Amino acid sequence: MEEKFIRIYGELTPEIMPRITQDFLEGCVKGKKITLLINSGGGSLKLYRQIKSLINVYNPVVKTVCIGDAYSTAGMIFLLGSERVMIGKEAQLLFHEPSQELNSTYSELKKMMEVLEEMYNGIVEEIFEKCHYFFTKEEVKTKLREGWYVGSIDAFKYGFATEIK
Image (cartoon, rainbow, N blue to C red):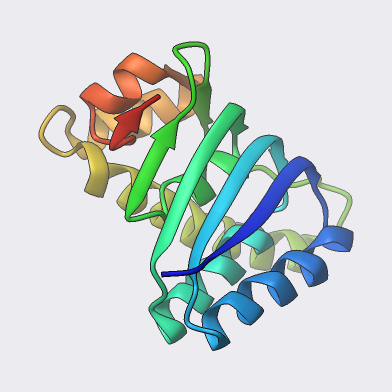
């Protein structure tokens, strides 16, 4: 099967979403295996949600590769692969609770809290799905609250990664 490589590097801002989405769709339409090469400190959860939606609609074969760091949103994108590879023992994931700037009216904040709650529950479920043999949901929530750094060896041990190279 031919592969489509997509780089997800640097900060995940709304400005890079169109390029990644276009590359992802191109791979889906052409029936290619999609390999996401990730080295990012994270950013907007919108990209994670967009990629997850495309996977649900097109059902492509997705491999994710962590080259260095996959923090925050990048870590969540890493979990979307059916094959999840950590490159080297120094590679690292970071998971934490979602956050949002609070420069809004009361009504906007109230709606924002509903959205954040939905995101938080989705993050907990996605992470728990991979590591439920080792942690309860409450333990996952505690780790997210503290900021959960996971190195390659633990990522493999807990089921976040399927391979270390």
